[in-house]
Amino acid sequence: MFSFSVLIPMMIETFLSLITDWIFWLIVILVAMQYQRIARSSQYLFKLPDITSWRPALLAVFFGLAGGLFGSILLIIVGISILELGIGYLWITAIILMLIRQRFLCFAYAGGVLSLSSLIFGFPDVSVAQLMGLVAILHMVESVLILFSGHLEAFPIYIRTKQGQVVGGYNLQKFWPLPLIALMALMMPEQEILKSAVAMPKWWPLIKPELLQGTGEPMYVLMPVVAALGYGDIAITTLPQDKTRMAALELAAYSLILLLLAITASYVPELAFVPALFGPLGHEFIIYIDQRRELQGEPMFVQPKHGVMILYALPKSPLKKARVRNGDIILSLNGYSVNNQYELRGILLETQGLIEIEYLSGKRRVLKKVIIETGTMEHPGFIAVPGGYEYSFMEISGSVSRLRPWWDKIRVRLSKFL
Image (cartoon, rainbow, N blue to C red; front, side, top):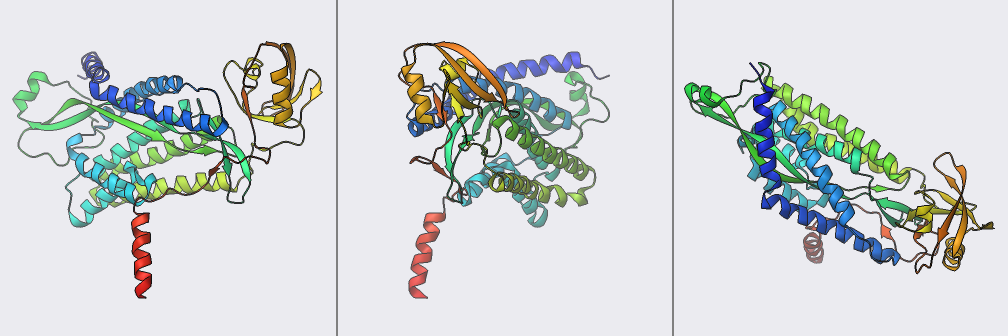
């Protein structure tokens, strides 16, 4: 009879061994370095005082631990065995695809390529159902992480659109260390299984092992695996929390469909081509929909007719104390109307003591008046939307191939002979 009282302690013990492993903390350090790089970019772009990156890094570790536990439960429920995935081939393929285009560093594309190669050429010998099931679960974990933490600590940016307009936006770049408990299926004699086995329900696993060799019955062993997930996007037409909510829902729908297709292929091998194709093509489709919505929509963070729209309020700044949020519009300070960020800066820097801030809050533009106390400041503590005089901004473009410089050189040389 199936008993959680036996399985759960085994999972906890394996999970604790993961978070005390030096490899996990090495990935944590690498993740922290990425957040430090992002913070320095914003600091350079807006000439800000020192921005600490420890808070987003700690949040990433916390949500990574929660996501790892959630992903581990899914991996065990579905029955993904790491011996049937061709992990080495998967990483090599992902790196090669990254050289073609950076955003192809994703298991959705590498898994699809490997699965199609296995189905068409018979190499490498991998289980398509298991491999695409892993891709589905990793993206499902990513969707949950995006939903709950993708919008947190979003860094402001100025972006020049393809139409040449400089607008405000947010860099939604996230990295999470991911400790996972995976399974390893082994073929063991039946008497050996009976000594140490945990009885599982009859419906388990959802995806059956395909590549086991030898006689006996399959036995699953819990294996600690350290991984990492990343998410990169920008928010121009909507607030970060709205953007990440939509992205998470779309990615979750993609993951669920892919997982169902992988489970189906486990029982009907003739349908293995379906998840192999849907993995990369479905991923491309949700990226296309997201980019189309973002680039063709109306930018939200632009200078309003009256007042100054705030893109970001620094911690401990007067606007932060007044609970001014991203996208709110400052109308006046101490009764003086402000219509550009330079007027707002001047009044904030010159005023000491009590200050009355009048602003429009939220999507419904609710009028609020707040009186707070300020002190001596060296920086006004906010970043406003672009006013038309900015010289530092980012360009919107597709990811660049690492092979592009080589291809350009070859094309130039070929042109001399043609």
